[in-house]
Image 1 (cartoon, rainbow, N blue to C red):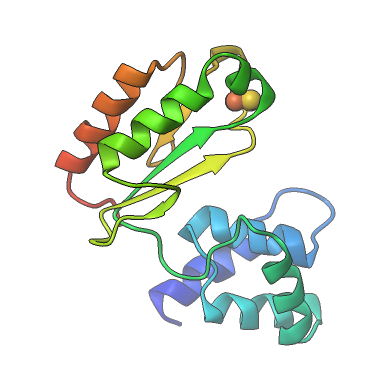
Image 2 (image 1 turned 90 degrees about the vertical axis):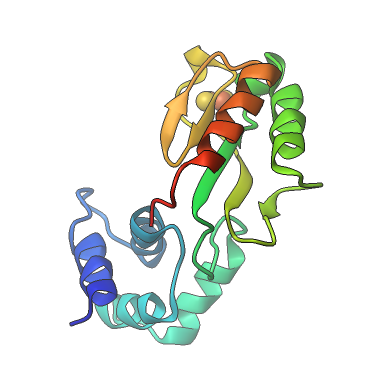
Length: 158
Ligand code: FES
């Protein structure tokens, strides 16, 4: 078993909740790897007694899954109600500007992925962003830009 296959296997088998579905298994893989590789579609199909087409139908329905490895660093800006009310739009603009991007996605050099998240689960700290899965709350446009600049100085996490 390759390292990738082992991580997929462990993510799918390690789900703590009582009800495991195709969707929950895909989410577990996305959480572990940051994307859904082809190997995971095959594995989840076998694990769930479903066809690869069934698994693909679920995976492709949800816009938050990605099928290519993420860039070296991943920044998420929360776009949920609490964060929105407390300035998420300014934070998001500032993050894009610091990254030299027009919209969410990957930088051409694959150094940074920027995306919006519907709730990062720390609403009382709004507005919230995450940098390589570390949450930071009460960010301002200025601190968000500094956070992105700092992250881009670091080596990749993968
Ligand atoms: S709405 Fe932003 S963390 Fe929940």
